[in-house]
Image 1 (cartoon, rainbow, N blue to C red):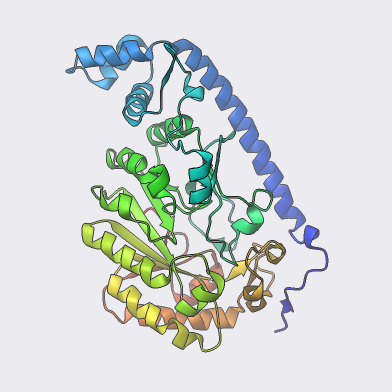
Image 2: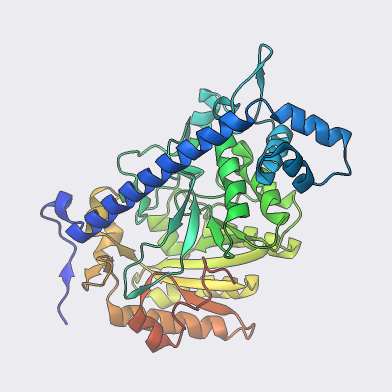
Length: 415
């Protein structure tokens, strides 16, 4: 088989027309949903404006009444009362010279001055669109479970050479944390209440879930929301070893912490600003010992020279952690990504165009298969009954490896 290697003649036209059309349709759908939601939200806010203190004081005076009883008495939604209580607890409302700020103008939870923002490596700004949206864009022929994305931030300070965010966020290269947290937590509570099908909310798709946790206290405020219910699960995905805030909290079966790891040689070349893999694995082990649900992603595997030797120590360390799930994924990228890579483009020489359904360039199929077979054999040799899955792989690859398709257990799956 002959492969076309990634040499771009016109980088602005590399993404296919059908992909651009899908993106435009998705943008239009989200804009319509946001417009309808905003109008309904404004109508409801006008209805309940000025009631918050009255309702909360009434509950304090009548501790025996349930939230549903109070909501019925005042003619408002239960989740509105829960959100009011949470915002009061978190300090995301403040008063300005005797007058209350509206919910949209309230004090942000992530309230850092410019100096602290620069030191942490991000900027703060308000998010104008929804914080939560549904990920279901995987084309036919590529297997990936559907899940919800929590966009608490955009971008990441690690600047991994292969990272798809370098292309997705090419017009916003500076990592951004969104400051209008009152609305974000309102959306999360609405989602927890209104989404009937048990689902995963992934907080690590557009940023690293833990890298700024010490500064913005995301998990301190997010984990309890999931711990108090039993339907949905929160996924925290990270290349960071920053677990100090999590270690202060009680583990919850509704919260999954997942670490992306790679061979030391691969990480040193292509993940230069990220913590070393051994630090991430040590963090994973510490959380597991405390009782947290821990998953690992060996992704993206890169066929560096003597790749079996390069990955051997990592496989031993993964077996030592004994996570509930290990997800394997290979290097994959849209051809235009190499024009926006932040730390060189050496990694892209391992990709070829096999004209896969999603339009990404990948490690050649036969080599991918060989790598997966080797990793699966080594990980299964520990005899721990480890669950294994693949990330954004073809139906053919799943079939050859004997891994179930849509029902597989992987990093983003519910079970």
